[in-house]
Length: 289
Length: 338
Image (cartoon, rainbow over all chains, first blue to last red; front, side, top):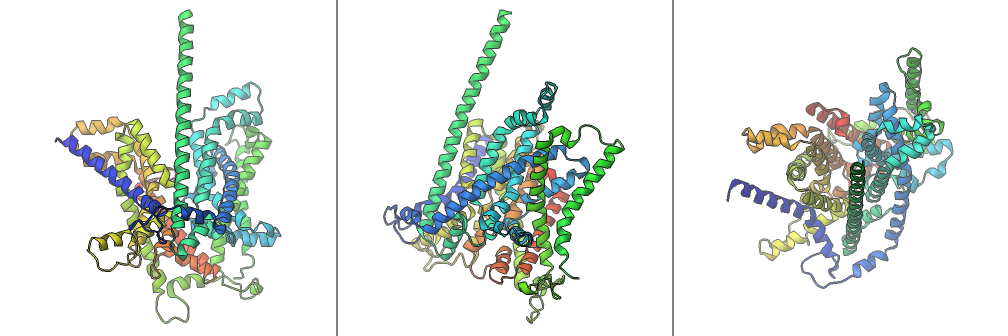
């Protein structure tokens, strides 16, 4: 065996180990969801069962938590995608002297621990809504959405910024020269250009909100979300119903990933076909000329 | 000093800073230092208003004011609502005093439990960060430079799935493995190596394992993005010139990927030191981690000002870490957060 082959074997060995570490715990947890043993365990594997899923779906608190998580997720998308978009556009235009301060402020939530964001959110809104008489806004779901949005907006902004960096400003100028108003340029040039980024920012915002625990556990007040109910259940004791929840979430993610991949492949194939057709047409035209 | 005037002052502060920059901008436009279209001419009134309102709401009401209110609260005493604004509502350092020296009635010289938990959290977080870097660097390099396009796509798909499994379930998976009736104990006892189970969770083995697992993927992606941009020709040139493999990594790939390394390390450190799920789920009653102590200030001691002080201490630690990374790597904030 020469040095190159040794290297290849070592790399393969490392990759297998890495993914075993990554997936091993999840797979073991997944198996316990199908074991009849009342305590989540792999050995002995007593018998195959789906009863834990049944128990999970009948858990009222979990289902209320799930509904709240979905509501918060939608709210977060509605808040953080526009804020992130505005943040990115302003970043490109902001007065040069204020740029570094502005950047520091809007990017800081990315580097702040989630618990601190949750804590500061409840402290501020408690006093602010109390003092201004808008106490109805001091509500667990709204505060959780606001707290999560403070850093999820920053993620969205970073997504929009990286797309805006490749934006060709000649397009904007051409439209203005042709008599479009500024609002029309925004509506018909910039937004369509950013549409793929809007979609990926929305998906990312929803998923980040759905899985968040650190910020939510403070900001949710006396309400509950799926993750806070889950945390309570896990602290009370282990039951395979929790593993069943994990299996459900993993199954949905895997299904989502596969669908996304298939859609993307189809789109890539379609784009490649379009490009080929365009090239053929161009070639024919050149040949005719 | 009376604390009653704190809130109006704090609320006015970000608006005053915004106004100041606006006035300077107007002045500079008058003397001709700034030229070109103004903000509203460039965006139109409707879009311009949307941009300003959205950014102001986000930056002021969701980021700056909550943080300032938290810091302000950390300098206040804990008072019943009726005493707020009264003669006892004055700014004080007593919450920070408590972190260092414990309650006034305790006989110990220092607040040993909290201080030890704080340092342990920082040191363990640094170790976890380094461990994650060592584990993820080869994978990131392989994906960015060695793997074929099809293999890369497959690996990325594999990485995405566990990324969206939430922290509590990840921690729970480790409990299934490490608890006294868990997989490892069953295996060891089945093999006859143990006669009775070891309490891995009580020994904090589970907690540290869970913490090093939890944020692994947040190290992979920044590293991968950074190394991906390195031209393959540079590595080949070094190899042709006879550089051994570790030279290539230490003097070509790593210096090039410095922003990615810095951003991965900052994220993992911040998330680990602020982790709540793994210590709650995997820690025993005697486990030391700083975040659950902060949590208890709020939900067991019901002492919000003290909890704010503890949260602010954690925040300062993270800021210090970011500054240290920027200083060591000679990087700007923009390079870390890309």
